[in-house]
Amino acid sequence: MLMFLAEAKLKSDARTNPNFLASLLTLVAEAQIALPVRQAAALFFKNFVRENWKVVQPTFIELMCLG
Image (cartoon, rainbow, N blue to C red; front, side, top):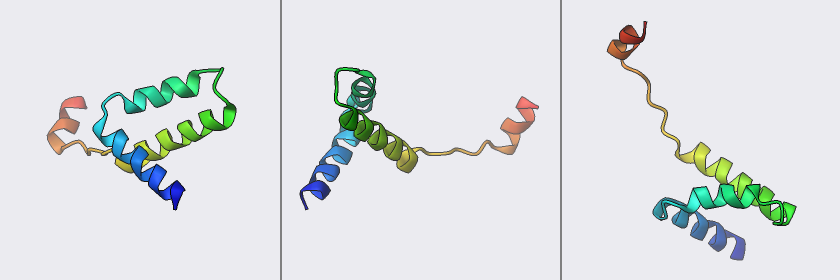
């Protein structure tokens, strides 16, 4: 139950704090942070991006302009 609440809090912070994801990447890159913590931060970042990234398909006109 505690893990579920912690994950919900992280997801909420990621959506409301514009610096949250950048802070996660800073944590991942910090060699002094314990490896399991860095791995958890990287995994959370990856999953958050995978769940929230909006893929926008180009329109026909945009494709023609690129062509």
